[in-house]
Image 1: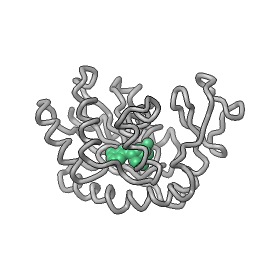
Image 2: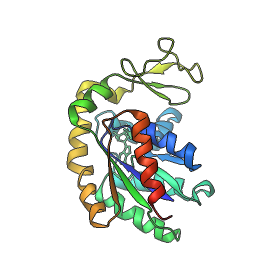
Image 3: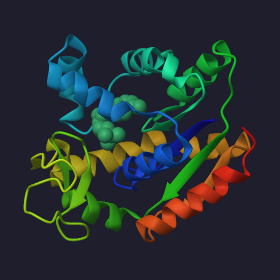
Image 4: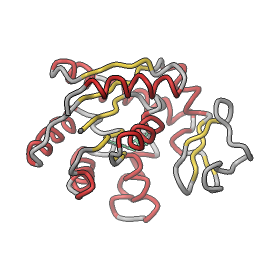
Length: 217
Ligand code: AMP
């Protein structure tokens, strides 16, 4: 099963992808996490990506596609994967089609999580992430038991630089201009399935699993 989680920043793609991957035993391929790993290791790609990520802009297609292509070509993705945050542009969507063809695979479905902008801003500005295991929290909606500490691994929680108000606005603009057109693209290909992302986390997971179970691998 090759599934895409499509949605604006803050729609819950990362949270839901983690849950679905556990349930379905699939690897989670999140382009944002791949970039953050490069930033942490201070690779050349990480240095290049930082200048875009810090401004809330998209990293150029050529380097993003090459990075995801390398990840999808690894053996653990042979049985499928859940893509989170990729594709984000038409060029990336077309490159993914080609890549899956090369791998002798095809896209099973695209799950679009719809959430209004005002809710996204509220979610992103209160978001905290574990530095160690990347588990997400929210200062109001899902706070950790102990302040600044991950419930799962006791790692330190931090606020992503790109979750600052100015950058959130830029990311939402970029989403509406560059990524939202993919909704129509995948609708046209009969691959799009929409869920309401503005309900409880467990209910969103249930909706997604119901759709996935109805899809033919
Ligand atoms: P995310 O963790 O998915 O919110 O991604 C964080 C940042 O990484 C984005 O704001 C972009 O700057 C960059 N990024 C992640 N995925 C992509 C992508 N598919 N194409 C271009 N840039 C990306």
